[in-house]
Image (cartoon, rainbow, N blue to C red; front, side, top):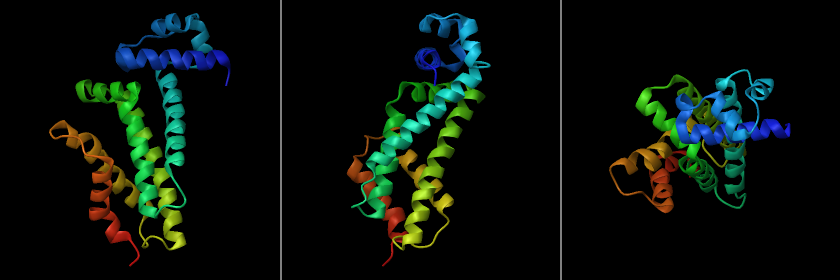
Length: 190
């Protein structure tokens, strides 16, 4: 990737984080990057394409976080838990993703919703591959990996984000315990 392209993406990420997708203009991005607006259009057709490129780079970062969280010496349950929890913490702490979530909630912004949906699909596909390997190795009961990944992801989102809107945050250990109680015991080989 070209150095200017990276600079533009970082500048756009900063602007989207501060002003949201809707509030960001190509002029603002050009000013933050210290380049002409025409330079941005050399690499990105429009603001939506630029956001998509940023989202893809964030997905790659999330996958790297998840991959680092997976320790082959752990049980399948522990590996899945550590990977998804790492991804959700990344999502929860990343300013751009927080801003996009607020923009979807406040304005119903379709572009921001598409970006978040794209991230969710990538995470579910990543988890699905790990579940498929666990089923193939016999460390997890046969199941539909994609549906299982979807359910696990949605449960984590509910416990990490939704729960905290009205209740004190749950610890990593409590989330792991709940995941084990509600999901993994049903999938574990006895």
